[in-house]
Image 1 (tube, rainbow, N blue to C red):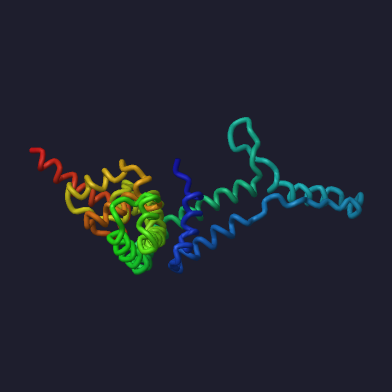
Image 2: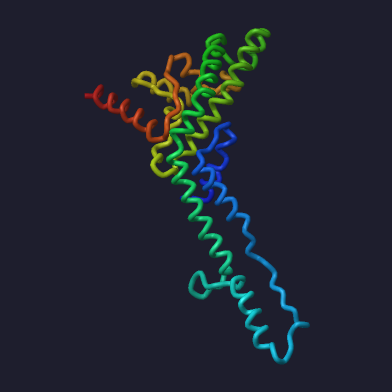
Length: 253
């Protein structure tokens, strides 16, 4: 189910990647946060000591005006659920969240540019480390390899953490306006160019993880098969997949 508020909350967390949100998007997130903090359950105060026979009708009307926003209103036939204030807050949250999503979709290319230097550096580190490691990356094999192998393994794991954070961010884009597309684990941060590379990446998902230790088999296979790396939006990843699948159709003729 599409939940704009939930998705907008994840957009607010993009800064954890070490990127700076564009001014318009940052402002939209601030508005969303401000609406979320609005209190809707204010207590109503009625000072009975201020009531006199002459002003009683006026005071009752004042109390009614204070109560009205906090009283339940019919949100469906036969039901009284939310106060007018809570209903207004929910509608405002929904509109603000959709505004965040629209601005987030437009911001994606700029966010990718900010991420690329860090991502590229991590890929370079990961590639160097993996190529220096033995084929068997199980814990026992790493221990047998000695300190030098362990150091390269740890270097690969640190670099992989950066790659994985970028990969997870790409996966989260699937609901954004103008960005939505098939979320394909094999083309989020990888750019296979032919059937052979794509098939080997897909087969990586069937490999036994104990032979790779803490390393992702998909990323290890990508290095060993010399697959190109790059940050792709879901739509761009889908286009890569589509182009390769077209090769499959042609080869089957």
